[in-house]
Length: 69
Image (cartoon, rainbow, N blue to C red; front, side):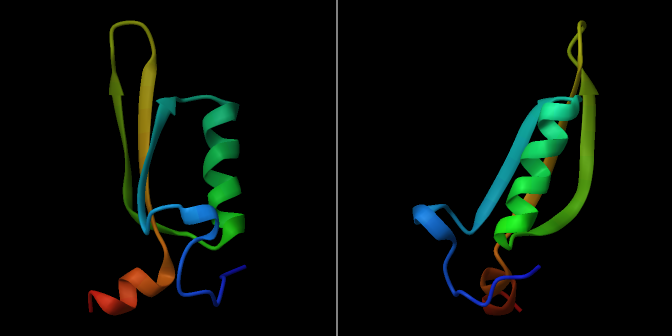
């Protein structure tokens, strides 16, 4: 569900980079921002810190994408 608002809720930034261990909690965080109206931006990234796989996913508020086109 994409939001029609021109700005993200609660003063959140237009661009966000979510990072954390590759676990269910990270997946829930990504799902939550998608439900708010953010869209995935680019491909996810993964690295290994010697102990855990750490993942990152950028998200962008839809109006920011239109303004940068």
